[in-house]
Length: 247
Ligand code: ZN
View 1 (cartoon, rainbow, N blue to C red):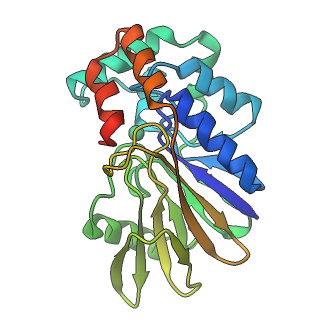
View 2: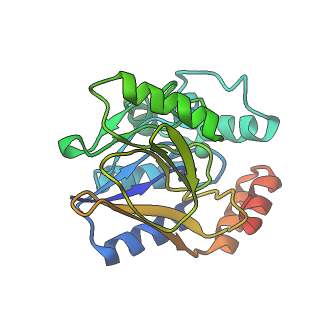
View 3: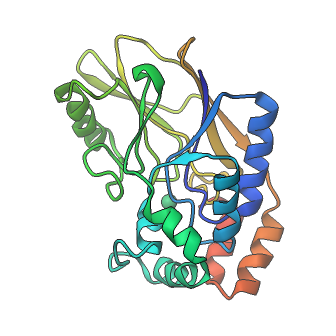
C-alpha cells in the first residue's frame, strides 16, 4: 500500500487543492488525514465537501472536536477562539455531524501504522514537541501489544520524525527516510493549511508500506487568494499574515 498522509488542513481550500493535485500526480492507494480539517481559515465547508466526495478518512483534531461542539475552546488563544466561533457559525448541519463522527484513531492496513492527531497518550490535545514527550509515546507503543511500530501524528504543524532505536530517541528532519523494521517511529507530515516551520509551502508525506520508505513533500499554493478570503470573511488578519511566513 502507498499512503499519502496529510494533516492540519484548517479550512485552507487553496492549500488542500494544491496538495491533492500533487498526490494525484504521484498516485497513491489511500489518503489519510491526521485531523484539524477546519479552524483558522475561511473554507471549512468546501474542505469537508472534498473529504466527503473523495472519501478521505480522517481522525478528529482539537479544532474539529471544538467546532463540532464536543469540547469548548476555553484553552484556545483569542485569535484561535474567534476563528473557532466563526467556523461553528459557518458550518452546515451536515458538516457539523461529519466532524462529530470523526474517530480518535485510525489504523493502516496489515499493522503498518496508526494515525492520531496529537499523541497516543492523548489523541486530540497533547503536542509531541520534544524527544521527551516522544519517549512517553514510544513507551505507550512498547506497553501495548495492539499498537503498530509506526505512529503518524499532527497538531504541531511541523514536519519531523522521531526514531526509537536501541533505547534512544533520535530526531530526524530528512525528507526521505527508510524505516528500520527493528525500530519504532513517530512521524509528523507537517501542515497542509498553516505550516509553522518558516516554510509557507503546504506539507505532506507519502508512506510506501512495502519498501518502508517515507517521503516528505512541499507544495506551493495561492497564498494571496487564501489571504484575501480570510480578510473578506472578517477573520483575524493575523491568520492571513502568518501564512506568508509559514509560522
Ligand atoms: Zn492544527
